[in-house]
Length: 254
Image (cartoon, rainbow, N blue to C red; front, side, top):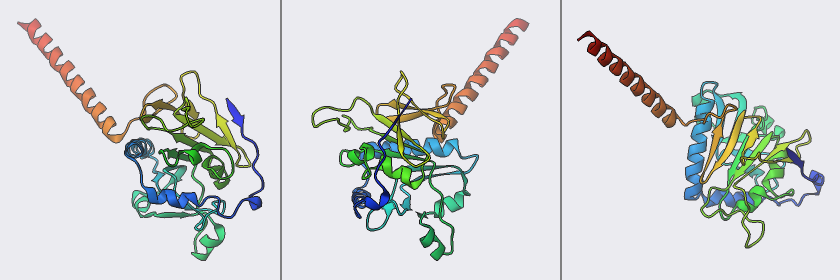
């Protein structure tokens, strides 16, 4: 179920520096809760798309005309480029993402494409602009940049999202899809509190300080370490089963 947000005014009517706060956020660094979740979520997404080479970027500097601050700069916590394959060596070299056509041409390049899905992980000082409505906040801004989906998560204990000064928001996970005009359409959770990401073909499931991803069948999407541990356990179980069968056969021969 989706709920359409009200249409914002034309871009030309925006205050010239209404996104200046984004530059301050970049200087703050991440809290422990943010770092733990971003490390986990980045590992899950990178492992999920490793075979296809799709680009998953953390804190990449994006330059876009819709970002109204002194540098036209925004750095999402995680940006996923579905279908955009970059060799690992090139991924490691990328430090910025120029989306302004004129600037890109001046550098002898094509303007870079928009990320498909963006994630922001909230802290006590940044959460309002992660989830608030209106042209000054990220749910609107990422749509103007061309993203297809945006998700925000509150991993903090206690949670920091609030509907008022005293009342906490009842959810840790919020999400939006964008219509053809780049306007945000809020996603409604299912009965289990999950949000479906059509772009990632995954259920997003709140789990206290972690945000889990599951496939359509309900299987948990794993980090590389989790995948290796599962493979090791399965191998040990196969060995144990073979040893048990050998003992049974030897006992039958005696």
